[in-house]
Length: 259
Image (cartoon, rainbow, N blue to C red; front, side, top):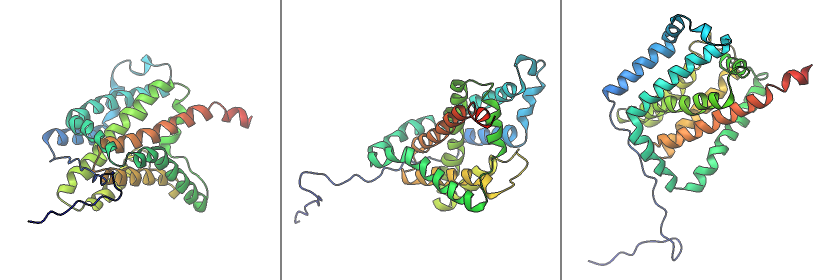
């Protein structure tokens, strides 16, 4: 048998390694329980049960802090539940940074910038920016909730729960049964919809477009990074972290500027 030499693009340099795929595995009983609990508390309004605890609102200085307290409890609990379901896959998928590392590191801030620019163009065409109920609520809480506490819940815990549900489950595990890009479409639609589930609907394209763009970004990044939950999570953290810094930096200034 004749020897077939390996091809190297440049002498002394090995060929690039192919992107590793991090399989999410099959849906487990724990996944079903977590999803059911998420639907009950986040979509069907089960979170309101927390306010029935005697003296709940009296334990906080104002209503904004009390409302944030509900989110803090829920996201902390669901962060733990999600970590129990996918912790090993999550930490293993950080290995995606070994493949095309420069492109992936640059895409962390670059992805956020692309979505911001594209959303700005579309919203300008659509007649101007609109603030969603979620964004209004966040701004209202900035005067009552310290940035470090808000950062942990909104930029660390929240993104992990959402990436577990909308990428790890709806793309990673669902793609075992159907085309992965169809899964990405389902993920993006549901990811966008969940942010308006209890907000009285959508009034304009400019209002929901940022969530569509973010859903597309996370879904594509998750697939191209080899179904890396860790990489999609990092993108989500960067997006939410920058948004929080902007809100906490500009909110105290804007009222004074308009006076």
